[in-house]
Length: 255
Length: 232
Image (cartoon, rainbow over all chains, first blue to last red; front, side):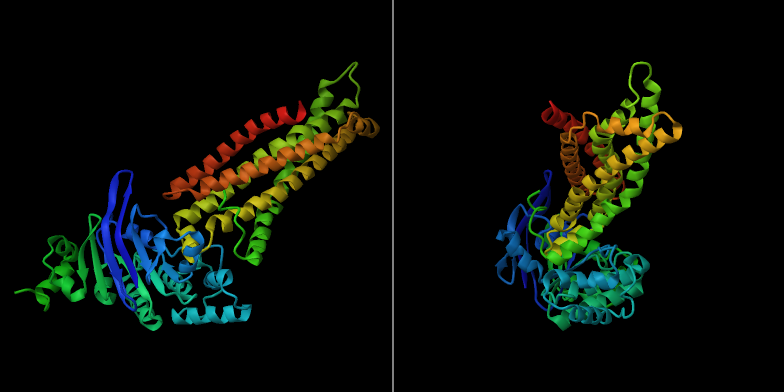
């Protein structure tokens, strides 16, 4: 479980996060949603330590990450996997080398065990036989899957996914959503997904945190979100005609 | 800087990175350094021959080629040229890794990204650039000798005498001290600009340009200071 308590962050006088608190539950896919610029990526970066919050604390299973020194944080970071928006694969390495990299750096596995683990991860994301290719030779969806394979190579306790579906077609996006949900269940991880894609939210979310103007404006699950009274949340959810149609025709319709 | 100089997480991985960087910084620069040194030594020989005459002895040609190559061209201008080649390479590589979140990915894994990416470049520059400069000195002087013979501006005996006259071995030490300092300046300034890039492709290009310009300016200023400190 990851707990974020009273996080505030500003850049040059602009308050991006204001006293944000949230709990991301173990074994669940926890979504952070919100409009572009609402602060959801900043919240994620503060949570994983890529940015230092001005105020507040982050707890990984009760361990206060914000007060740890670099070496103590390193131990927690070995338990974190992250899928970046653009994949962030090392383009000078092959797919297999990308997945093997964390194992080489932090495990005592021998070469054969590492290769076996790489094959396991590749088959988990259905990319068998692609290990010798370079990231530039893969499609966007395949790069995302390699990113997931690399993120899970060390059997992480916590998985962070930043806009996992950006730039993907709807069918590939669903494949990625399902993969994230399946892996979360399989490994019993605490998964945090940052997204503004409502299809993903409906497809894969267990819990949802909606950020608006740097504050948590809604916490709940899918069904609660659909019938929320919050005008800002409703403006966000039902921005597309498709979602409006769903609201008007589905059981979510109020009254 | 303290983060860069941290002990590497895995010695084996560091050694592999170091070999890769030595190949990029050292081996891949041999061609350009050799080309420039050969032509500069040859031109220096012909220009000196053109300037002297009358009471100035012919062995001055060998003497001038030696002094120019050892004192200034090889230890200062070769690092300036390498600042363009290697500096822009380092800054653009690190800048691209920054804007495509590859550095963030390293940090998330718990890897000391500055140490992992910058330290091998630092060490490779420290080892390879002085070697390239020694190679430049040898090639420059040799090409001067060859062109002197071919063009007939000096006999080999005169040229050899010029190479040996008033030779002070400290000049080579001075040159290598300068070169080592310039290598550290070039790699650290370029790595700094690349590592702290933010934004997109335009910022990567700007970082690359800044890395070269700042490296050259700092090398020139340091050259003045070191020359004053070490030679006068």
